[in-house]
Image (cartoon, rainbow, N blue to C red; front, side):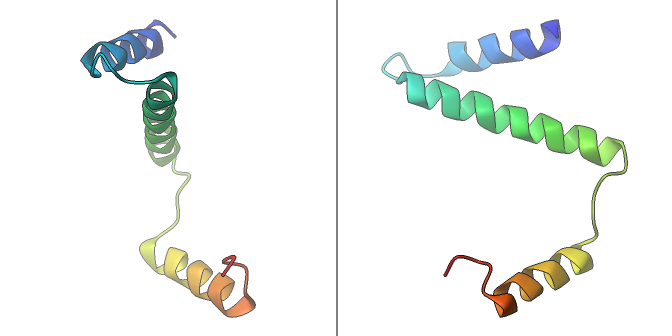
Length: 67
């Protein structure tokens, strides 16, 4: 857990002085999701590019894309 705290502090320190709380939260959430994705990939929880394309095409043809 200390690693996450250290990463968060480092990110905040590198941000411009005039950044907002929303900017900070956005950056921290982004890094959190990237780390989550890396962990999932390391643990074998991912799908192939081909499977992803099939799912996207399926969603698009069924109208589940929100458009």
